[in-house]
Length: 122
Image 1 (cartoon, rainbow, N blue to C red):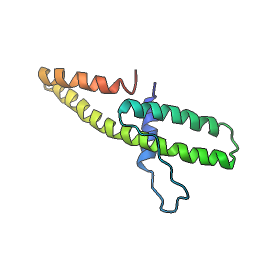
Image 2: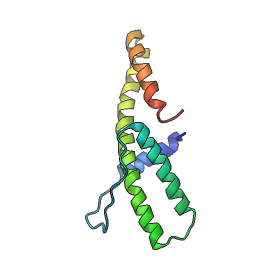
Image 3: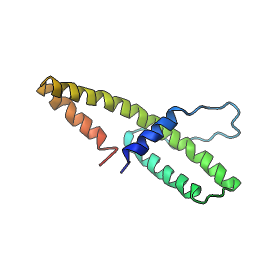
Image 4: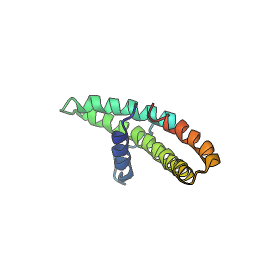
């Protein structure tokens, strides 16, 4: 289960990422074609990163592994950010529908909101 604060922090980090032209090696991150895949990759690759970071001292191999991991994390964050932007729009529809007593819009949008949000947090 993803913690909302961790997710928000991760999205903020991803939003500030800058691609430098002078990177030595480029790797292809694992694809995250769906929100479910993005959440899975985000969790799995954060666990891998954490295992290396916990060591405290990093070998050159550790740095290469971290570099490779970040590509998949960036791909996952991009997909999650895209999906969360859409989710925020649907939540706003739920908010306005409840505020204006528009039951039909609420019946349409609340299940969509819940379906997507449950892919992130159970």
